Length: 480
Image 1 (cartoon, rainbow, N blue to C red):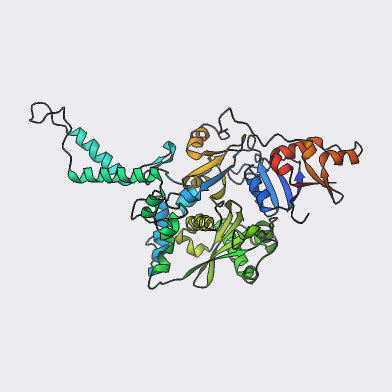
Image 2: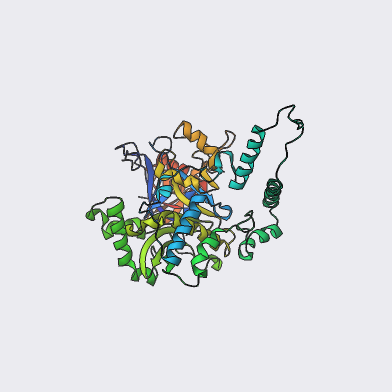
């Protein structure tokens, strides 16, 4: 059983307080205690709408809860930065290189925390495309010319197209070339658009020549001849088998968490105990895994520390799974909120997915937790393009630009076509594995041994439907 997942399902389905809309009894979810989980099993649970908090794994009851929570993921390899993302990177780099803080004390984290206009830098996700500012200016110029067409009798033939400046024609030609290269997607064209280190893995494909990739932005301080501040990013293993760096930095990390919770979330000191911190962000059911040496650090639970001039100012809590990084939580020093560390850390984690893709071709996605369309503090996640939401009925991922109009109409929605079904939702109870009296067996054998005294068939069937056939046949469900 050392290499298997062991879970204990809670059939209770009570009302809870909603932390998003503030309602006292409208939040519904199912849960189970994970004594142990393999990274593959947890990844499969994420794709069934589950999510962990410490060792507790829960799944919102989507058609009943007040604020439906949809699993959201971004294709990290095809990630397109918005203007607001570049603005944050510029700000952080300016601080690190020149020591210059933003002129305003206003926390620009607003874009990350409360969302914002997704079309702000010309990106129209509702149409599934992106219009660059250059293209917009060409369009504007064209429309202005149409407004000033010379009338008949003024000396110019109105049946012929109006004259256009050579500069505009060159610009249009260049944009058409860039679009053609992006759609062709050949390796040669990718290598012209991005550096060789990214082109070999398809990162940054379609970038206009001369435009910086995410990695280029993040590497700017490292290339500077002199920096006012030094930022070190340190990824350390946490969970059941923490590394020595985690143990040595535990006190500093915990104090930072406590300060953040009290200052940002207005929690009392008693609510920020080491016990609650450990249960929430340190303990993990995930087993450390190094299959075939695919990733140098292996898979499991990690803390990514942001160390500025030798001091921890920010910690991102993440899970590294076979094909994704799941972002769990972030806490930071409120004194450095001017650096928009929420956005910056998300871009760093996105870059980590892309970096690990060099070690394992399976690593592709960045999971941002839950997306809540009705909650501005969670809606911002839709601004990381291209993003997809998990259909709560078929468990397929659908483009967010297709989902958003449905969610504008009602909080709960099915995204997949009516022709699609939950293929993994049909479970044969004979193949559901249970753990009873320290022995692993199919559920039907367990019921036979109980000599007809087992009255939990409905509960086991419910559990199997929620976790799906794949997990139900691998996870060991504890029975008493």
